[in-house]
Image (tube, rainbow, N blue to C red; front, top):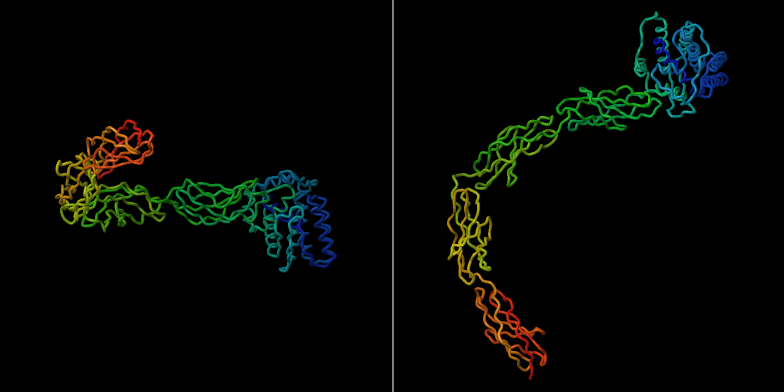
Length: 586
């Protein structure tokens, strides 16, 4: 039974040729008979045995009118075999068209009724028909051509021009079928899928389209053709594979595409290009093929893609020891555990602060351009063809230098600003840190030895006594020790505003009042410049350097109270308590 599968492909393609229209070129009467034969064979989209027999008679009549009608020769050779094929019975395993198509790997969805096979003559007639059709086809000359259009009811494929070379392909198929029919029972068994069989017979995608044109009106679909492979682009443990859709979908919409890796057989699917295949091993070389899937099944593979090696950036190196030098440092490290699947091109060591770098292909790496006496730490990164990997851990700190470090030189004293029981001491850093970074600065008062410290100017010294004069010096400290003191600052006197005076008696006058008070208990560390008495309401004021103070501009008959404030060089202090009320009068 399986021996017949091979030549049945010829029969199917041939039916496609009959079921299409063409351009008329021979004598009109003969060509009209060819047209009538085509209409009878196709029978409105449902071929029948009776239609094929009637078509065969039309093609014979056309040849009687014009023995050189190339199209009549061509179509008669085809219908002769088709009639014989359709009349074969169950004794040699040929059944209805659905049985045949399903045996060939097609799927029938029942949208159209299939043709039936009412006759059952001997299988020997098929071999006879093959030989006669071969004789017909040898009468074609190298000028033979016929333009075939897709079925009128299913106009989904482009027109195809069949030439003499295509007729030679059909002759080759018939010859192969004849050889298979001549094999003894149990001989060579051809058990491959339809697309492989098509490829083995040298059929182009154009011929496959003809095949699908025939099958589609009957509700049949085939597996799709092979996609055209595109470029494979590497990723991290993945590859993105591009492709072009097949020239034919087999008469059924393609639902998915599958990309498969070699080696490993890893797959990825997508309805469109490109497809990403994951789960790959970085550093392994892969190629890929693409297959298309429709409702019938999965088609053949595309050609293999270009070779590609998935990769990512390297891992982080392991930091080692750092050796200091003169304005430089030598940074040691260990290579990352993973190069990301691509050889490491270089390593880069970077300083902090400053961002100074050095690079090389092995450990250690020298970083130059550093500042002697400054503390530096370092990280190392690895680079491969994909990019730069993450940084290592940070190294221990080192201080580049030309000679053993010493204490810093003395800072330069700046301006000292007084505060409330405190002073803000400004300074300039020493001209030399002694070859070791300065850790902190300390300002010290005289007298009293009160201190304040910090890492930059200015420094605040607290705990001072307001009203008392102080000078200050500043020292710097590095890892070796403490520097000499700076020069002595100018003297300052910490101070604040005076405390509140004590209110006394208020004596009324004509549109005025005389306000008595007692001086505050503290002048805030700075001599009181004046006192200010203020009325309520009205806010009328009077000032003086001693008690009492006269406030004028009051309204006779209006009751007033008063407060007093003291002012020194720092500012105005808080108000006294409120006086008793008085009423100015003439």
